[in-house]
Amino acid sequence: MDGLDRKILAELQNDGRLTVTELAERVGLSVSPCHRRLRALEQSGAIRAYRAHLDATVLGLTFEALVFVTMSRADRGTVAEFEAAVAAIPQVQQAQRLFGEPDYLLRIITRDLTAFQKLYDEQLATLPGVQVLRSTMVMKTIVENQPLQV
Image (cartoon, rainbow, N blue to C red; front, side, top):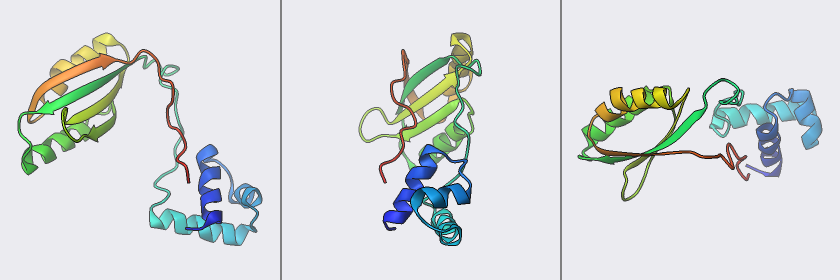
C-alpha cells in the first residue's frame, strides 16, 4: 500500500458515495488507474464494505448501554457459542473480547429503557457461559465512527 492508496482510503472514509471519477480527481489520478487501485483495495480486504452511517436518535433508537460480561467458563466451545449468540442479536452494535476482567464489552442500542430491560432479561442474561453482566447507560457520545488514520 502506497501513498495514493492511502489517499483513496482517506477520501472514501470521508465520503463513501464518491464516484470513481470524483475519487480519481481528488487523489490526482486518471479514472482507469484509480479504478484498478480501488478494486485491489477491495479485493485485499482493506475496504470491507460500503454502507450508510445512520443516526440512531433520528430513527427512534434513543437508549444506549455498555454491558460488561464476565464469563463463568472460557473453554473454546463456550466462547464460540457465546460469540455466535451475541452476533445474532441485532441490538448489539459492537462486541469486543477483552484481556483480563471483564471478558467482553457489548455496545447496545435500543428504543428505550423498557426495550433494553427486555433484551437484558430475555437474551443477554441467558447467553451461554455468562456469570455476571454489568451495564451502564451512555450519557453522551463524544466520538463515534472516527476515520482510521491511514
